[in-house]
Length: 413
Image (cartoon, rainbow, N blue to C red):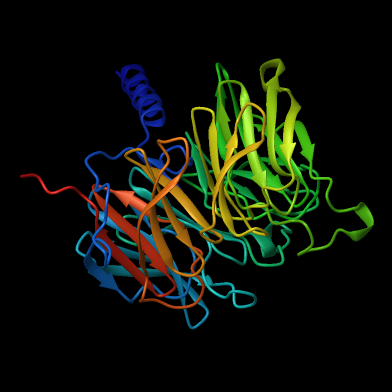
């Protein structure tokens, strides 16, 4: 009887780990493409209908994570970081503090919570990791600077936690404890990777699954790394060679906030403070990479990018525009002068939120990109850095202390 019970528990655990319900940074696969349909193709002149406004989410730049019935978002109030839970009508349900938040350059929270089944994972700007249940009760907490000899990047940690099966990962930035895998249920360390002994690169990692092998792909200050998720073994490194070794220091060439993109044997990344736009071929069952091309003009620091077929869409910081890049050659094929911003996609349309607070709807289905509609965010505080989120026909924009919901669903006649 005991053997049968143990077998049942093991089978339940296996099914649980392989069927995780994940809500996270830039969507289920971190690519920023939201699987939505029947959305408006043109907005009213004043913008889409505003459903609600919540001004209680504190200072911060992280996007919301939206489940079937709740919205989770982090923010800082009087230097203390909070995880907020809001219902789908914009009403605050509860808030739970996770300790001190970042108070230096661009003070406030940075990352998006990751919700996996009944647990919520948060990362603070000062390098703490917390796991909460859906009622706001803290399950475990890790102080990476105090307990694990981590180091702070110049603008504070900005990583949105990545969960895979029973692990949650964090780039600690320590000399010896550079990348850490925790047991996501207990907070116990499962492995430590020394990496390149660099501080963190503000990057939210992604997973690449290759048959039996799964890779964690993330940036430290001057390195894109491929790490085996089971063992923590560092398999390969693609160095960012824009800053000479003697000139490397926090805040100089180390900001690589855009998550990488894997598709059909190739890794694409855009590191505006590094090698800029790069295409890599992944070889030898994930054990090495080979550079295919790079485009030094695509200097996008943190706006995200979208790949559709053989087109890549990304902003540039220096030229302050939106570019379309050919994924085969790496050459620019089109541009729109609409400022530096963040980009996501839904229902075959691009959504662009620039740093002036303008939200734009762009048709990319023709030979040339076409700006269809736009409106201005007139609520909130500080910089317009947060990435938009789209869920069930609603567009969510976070602007500092404000979270705003807009109806972008077509009306059924």
